[in-house]
Image 1 (cartoon, one colour):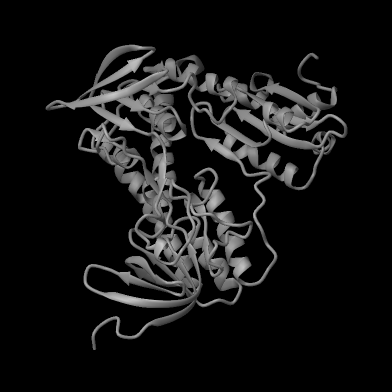
Image 2 (cartoon, helix red, strand yellow; image 1 turned 90 degrees about the horizontal axis):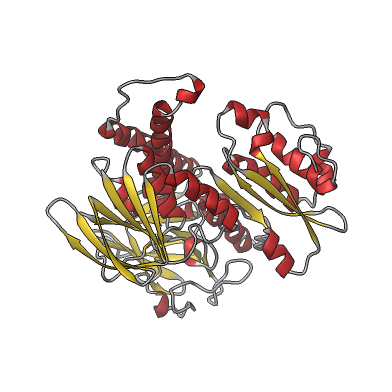
Length: 469
């Protein structure tokens, strides 16, 4: 019998096994659906394999190395500290393997059929799934597309051995002596931090006047200042023009404030954004509406204009965040099951694993004012917190944005150690309609960084204890 003669029938087909896809698949099973998930690469998608997880592992390794070399003011002197980068990469790979293996166990444990191959839409109710040796038709009642995104390639900076994207940076065999990073967004800044902590001299070429454009200027300045102390040079209003590869490096030409400059380095890392993976699915064959950037248009239940086809994650509007994709995956699965679930991005956090870490949720001060709120912006410094001082990491602050009339928490921004963990409490506060008083009356353990949230709430109420009004 020839493989692919008879179509397989499923209730819900999920294309892509990243944080959006695998979560959608499991939730769909929980709701009584027969589910097949298709993955053309490795289980776990970009995030687990070549994105979020390996980058955070590299960031952690760089941080450990830097701390070992730079803790003299705490009385800790370490001599002859070195990096075995092969070992770092081996350890990073082990972290990825544990998580991707765990996802596969979860999928199989929930009786999700895993199919390896590329999916191409044949109709509104079927796809052809192809691998190197065969093709198989799958008929579905509903489909969730979760194919993620890939790095944007600049025409003048085609990817090579020396001109690399984030995937290439994570796979380097050695710590570069010098690196040029094009783009000062979260990916560029996170990798800049990781490699500069390992001793790489980095030049960041940013086209605007500020790195990390989605965050408040004061937050971005903290990161910029910390990185400048660590072999990083910033060139603002800089437009990369061309690159010339040499035998052992690159020469990057850029226009900086109207003047041409050339930067020599071992590698050029391009981090200028990501492109949705929607161009090789055959979506135009079934009439799924997209923008000119390849973003799939969806409603509040993630449903496309083709009623039984849903889309989530990086291929729909909004920031390319793994936790956004997971959240959307649950909503889509529930919508398919007939539930009234719909997306609400009121309290979706954004985090940058820089030094110090940045995190934001809800409105920032400027955004709240533009939305017409009369607000109180209450700020509390990490320098006034005992735990931050004992960590020898007291740069930063928390800003709590509350509605003046009743103290309702509508936003928060954190710049400081463990901001990525601290932001969840503020997200919960916004989701549940808590006020500054609710937070201030919640007893926080001492000495912890979490106390900063309580202290910021007290500032909002006009009753701070540990700073002078």
